Every structure is written in structure tokens, then in C-alpha cells.
Amino acid sequence: MLDASNLTSTPRPILLILDGCSSHYSNYIYDEAQRLKIHLLFLPSNSTHLFQPLDVTVFRPFKQAIRREVMEEMWSDTTSVDKKNAISIACRVWEAMTKRSAIINCFECTGLFPPSVEKMIYRLSIFKSSDDINIEIDRTWMERFDAV
Image 1: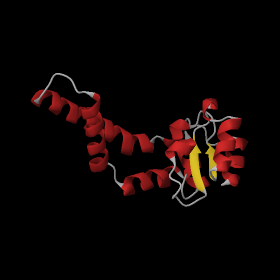
Image 2 (image 1 turned 60 degrees about the vertical axis):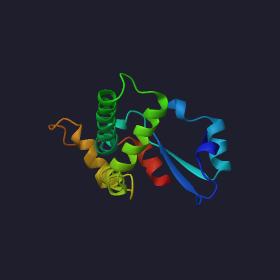
Image 3 (image 1 turned 90 degrees about the vertical axis):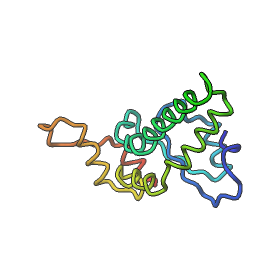
């Protein structure tokens, strides 16, 4: 998968950020990433909720726009959308909806890039009880952060 989805013309090394789901890493994936000069950064398990801005600012509007386009297609032409039309709709919506600045902003807000411990701690604090003043940070988080 890594080989097929990366253009050899892309400057190396590449940083690939993944969530901590165990199915996302194995010796094979690690070896392939090394061969392709891809640095893997695994976020701590169960921390996905800290990085939802990408879902909110990119994927949610994308999905909503696709639904609108599909409904328009069905109203104007047919009762169903075939695979070819679905792909065409998705590509058209992606080009129209996805802005580079929104994607960059999502990563800045979460503290992923540029790396910001302060922003990461803030994101963590949002999901903590308001009476819990001491925010503990999982040591694995800091070890992985230092690797970047």
C-alpha cells in the first residue's frame, strides 16, 4: 500500500502521521516505510478525540457536500448513482471544498505541526473535567513527540 500510494518524485523523507491503532503497524509496514524513506509517527492510542478538527473542518463539510450532490443527481436524473458518477461527484466536491489553508490550520490547531506541546496540552484540557486542574500527560506521548 505505501509503495502504490506514494509518488517516487515526492521529495524524501516524508512524515506519515497515524493513529495508534495496532492494525496500522507491523514489521512489514515498518520495513516498507524505511525502504521508501517514510518516517512513521504513531499518535498515542485513544487520543483520536484530540485531533477532531480535521474531521470537523475538512471531512464533515466534504461528506455533507457529497450528500447534497448525490441528492441533486438523483432528483435530476436517476434514482441511484453508479460508481462512476459517485467517483466523479467525490472528485468534483473534493476540488471545490478542500482548501489547503483549512488543512494546514487543522494541524496548527491540534499542535501536530508545527509541533506544539502547549497546544496539545490545551486540546487535552478541553476533554478533562473542569475541576481537574492537574493535567497528566502520558509519557509515551512525550517520547513520541521528542522523536519528531
